[in-house]
Amino acid sequence: MKIVVLPGDGIGPETMAVAVAVLETAAQRFNLDLTLEHDLAGHASLKVHGATVTEDLLAKVLPADGLMLGPMSTYDFKDESKGEINPSKFFRKRLDLFANIRPARTFPGIPTISRPFELVVVRENTEGFYADRNVESGNSEILVTPDVAISLRRITRACCERVARSAFEIAMQRRRRLTLVHKHNVLKITDGIFLDACHRVGKDFPEVEVDDEIVDAMMAHVVRNPARFDVIVTTNMFGDILSDLTAELSGSLGLGGSLNAGANHAMGQAAHGSAPDIASQDLANPFSQVVSAAMLLAWLSQRSGHAQYLLASRAIETAMEQCIAEQQVTRDIGGRLGTRAVGQALVRCLREA
Ligand code: ATP
Image (cartoon, rainbow, N blue to C red):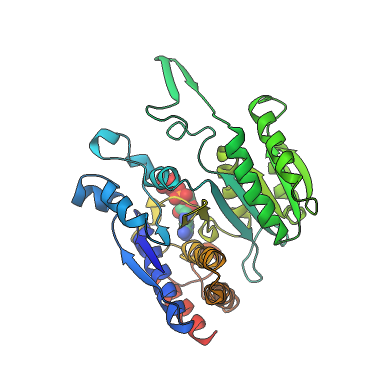
């Protein structure tokens, strides 16, 4: 198997270095036939190639089995004509990674304001309120006059159905409960299509218990009692916001791993941004990137039928749990270690796993 590794911007090189060490250790420990191919995206690529991502890079990624993408300085990339392309959007669109799977759970040993919970947010990744994703060319945010602007949200039945199917499949492997999150009381037509598509797909999964919540009420329910939820499926922007909340409720945004998955490709990517405020200070929590790597291995296992990849994925999670239990963690989750030291502790736990 070949995984392309792109460290990204801000804290990306620090957290990705840990994810790479963990993947290499897992490959040794579980005899995985795994090659990591390193390349550039974001500011590093802009400097060398004149663009944050290139068609040459895509040509390397397309035949690979998976991609690890670090966080990107999306705010800095404003002008595509100058090569400033949003790499997350680029890969999500070009690899058709329609489901963004964002697990969140509490761990004994990490202080939280919330009671224990374990849930997964499945976020639609290819349309919704994302101006750069909605249209073939151009942008779906329109400045009508200097003081009047319009933003369009695209919702299609096909995109809703495929993300709903992913969510039902995940629910089948878990506690078989799925919550549909929407704003149907206001966005009657678009969220009407979303709800209808989810219920139609649900007919193929009669074992899954389905309920739905309006997105604003959902925020309150998740804060009050996150243990109530198992799998949550929602449109793009609601999922973006909700999954930051669930990651932070679990202890820190630095725990938020994610997998962007499509029919033929998958990309592990931390749910947070490039955190420029803590970049290059050995402060970043690498667990988000490590969880994303573990999720990618599990996806590769499911796709290829190689059980070793799933064992490796589970061993990485166990190593993380051990580090947390031993307080070998970064400051954002109550520890005293730096990013590098957490990486060393993780590798040691994984070797012993
Ligand atoms: P971007 O513009 O790339 O989205 P941002 O700073 O606006 O970056 P995030 O990167 O998501 O948004 O960061 C939000 C907050 O969470 C920051 O204060 C950051 O320090 C913190 N944070 C994010 N990721 C981590 C991490 N891995 N470890 C520790 N803290 C983190």
